[in-house]
View 1: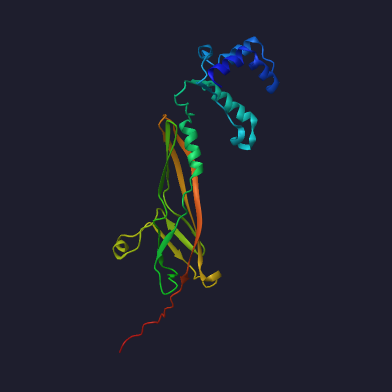
View 2: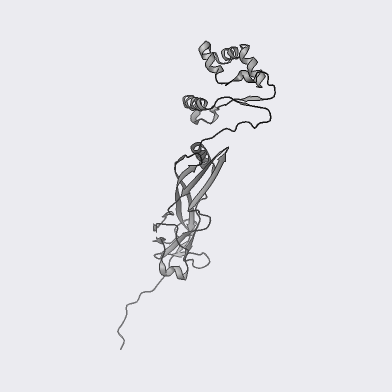
Length: 262
């Protein structure tokens, strides 16, 4: 409403009648005085037809399970610190302020962390198979983040969410994994220093579908946030999960008993 419209709405008694008709409430004089007090100094704008009052509004549409008791608590808290604001003509309307904690949770819910992708060594022959009984090096490729950072801004508040993970969690069929990090790409130089992520397969893939061995891969990310309004906190853990298939082959060897030479 304009300043003039709101003053007429209150002074004519329409405000009280609307409350009775729309909400089924019958406020007494004290309650009406409290309602009118939400519009500070409204009489000063009684002749203004260009400026407008802006009203705070809460929607229950995003409340989990449509729990109206939860909504009422949230709304009461919001209205207690956010009342109607008068904005003169030509001035910018107020921006809704979202606190840093709420903004961080909304941003965290909206993002998707990619699932892990890996490479491995050895890779033998056309099938690029690794070998039973050998250390198979595993490492995360460039599509797998060890850390993800997201920044979200709403009005004057900015929240920064950082999610970090310690490494790959590997669960191979027919094998044992020893992985405490994201792995190190194999090359001759790295072979001398070792890696933090290997699988030792104990059986070939010949008995499995498509002659490949499934390896379940998960990465657990722990998220925290900071915000420009001073809010900080934790957002829990998010785990990505995927499965990749690795062909595993056997190498046949011949063992002979040494004989004495004449």
